[in-house]
Length: 102
Picture 1: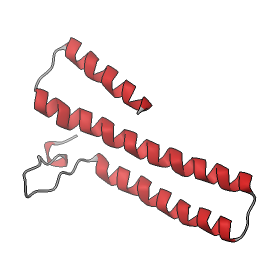
Picture 2 (picture 1 turned 45 degrees about the horizontal axis):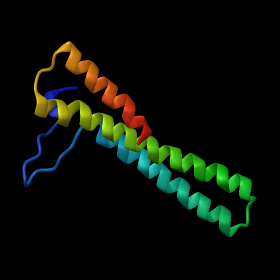
Picture 3 (picture 1 turned 180 degrees about the vertical axis):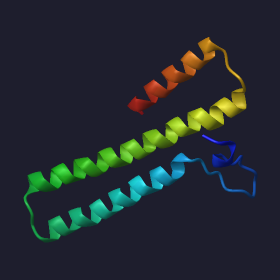
C-alpha cells in the first residue's frame, strides 16, 4: 500500500484507507441482496430459500467488518505503535486472527 492510500485523520479530514472502497462495495452488494430478500418475503417464497439468502447477507456483512478491522490494525494501530520487532509483529498477527471471533 502506498502512503497516498492512507490519509491520517485530522479533526476536519476524512479517515480513508485503501480497503474502504472494498468494504463499501461489499456493503452495497449486501444491501441489494437485502432488497431481494424483502421481495422474496413479499412473493411468499419458501422459508428455507429466504433463510439461506439471509445467511449469505450476514456473512457478507461479517466479512466486510473483518476487512475493516484488519485494515485498522494494519494502519492505525501500527502507526500509533511505530516500528515493531518480530515478536511484536507476531503479537499483532495473533490479534488479527482473534478478531475473527468478534
